[in-house]
Image (cartoon, rainbow, N blue to C red; front, side):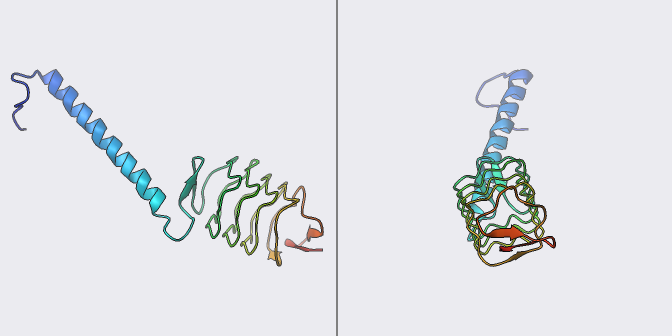
Length: 162
């Protein structure tokens, strides 16, 4: 250990206190650096974006998250749990990977799901009367509470215009 040149005859207690303060400061810097890295690692994909405390990555656990109006274009939320009335109203989910995502009871009104992957996504009780849909979505689970006019979910899990 280096000699203490700041304070002559510093007591062991004050040295211990100083070491603890330094350790806390180092931990805080590492935590901040880790958060900045996690936010910036997303690169070209929207995966890894943190919105209202929800880290949007595959397998994310964000039940009840408020993501209203979020731009999640191309996000990879495969197997994410966004159940329990997650607010995705007016969110841009175009081309998002939502395969296997739990969207049960989610608010998807006016959400743009154009080109999104929904295979295995649980839409049970989802509220999506004004959602923007395109094409045919195969392999969805559950029955939404409300769908856009003219859309239906077939018994074999196909969400399509009807």
